[in-house]
Image (spheres, rainbow, N blue to C red):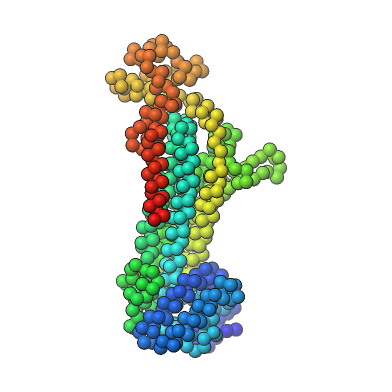
Length: 462
Ligand code: ARG
């Protein structure tokens, strides 16, 4: 068994079971690139601090670059007995460049090292998540534009409520995802702080130029308290919280895709290549992808609780419990990425069943509120108008008739304020057109929303 880097004070080697239990290499090997880039920058800082000579630093950097290539070309295999990615790379370096490699860890601890790697990695993942969301928004906006004039029933309590445009419905999700991106960019700012130079917990006694390090590693800020720097995992929790909210948004959409594609609603058709059949019932076409995305929310919420629980009550500073943070975060990162990338393709291909939506929007007295406002415009108090229209709806229900088909003569029996122009407010088209205040479902408002959402997408790219 290979000797541990820290084995000096030990007389016994680690029990195999304990070693296997505590090794994290299978998880944290993902951080290999950040770890190597960090070490290259650190070697330069050590040279600047005169702890390494120029040729020693060069040797180390060359060795690290070769290791990076070896990992990327899959020539290098990691070893469990070296615990984690940091130790594996250090061991590889020593075997490659000899004793000079042993100098690289001077003044650095795995505690500030792992936090630095993780922040570097997460910064990339945040930007990647934002870019996936942007692509998804772009699909939603295109679909919304195609469907500005497609009406559908809007729901509250999952009961038909008022007519809306399907385009307006889709744009609601664009809004949600815009907030998600804002949240992510805020988290990016908090993640963009470099812990390196905090040592194990109390800082470094070497003249390491932390500003120089931050610049090389692309950090905008440097941590200001070494204890906090090595024990803070807020940035991870923040990301997984943001991922949870995104997944929650996706789950609401998923639920609607499942409902709307059901025989009962039949508003949309999901693409066949994103559905599955039944092993028993030959006629079935099941919305499994939408259901799975809905189900995967549980994983991401679970990882959020996992992280919050790992960190709860931990004394300052580093504790090994914290090693569990990476598996939790990586799982949330992967789950979110998979869901978004599937939805980008799937939503692009959904088909709208125009006939069914048109039919649905005309059944269920969806323009009753418009009728009440008609009376309000004629001077009737809203509460009174509400009561009158309620009575009309009851009458319609009894006579199995939609509001649109009630004659003026009949309406006049409920209120003398009704005149010939009432017919206009009874159609779904008119109702939608009238919702022309900012944020409403009127076609011109949706067009504006689409325009400004598109402008945001372009700005996000710039
Ligand atoms: N693999 C460890 C982690 O991810 C690195 C830090 C280990 N530090 C220590 N003192 N054992 O947390």
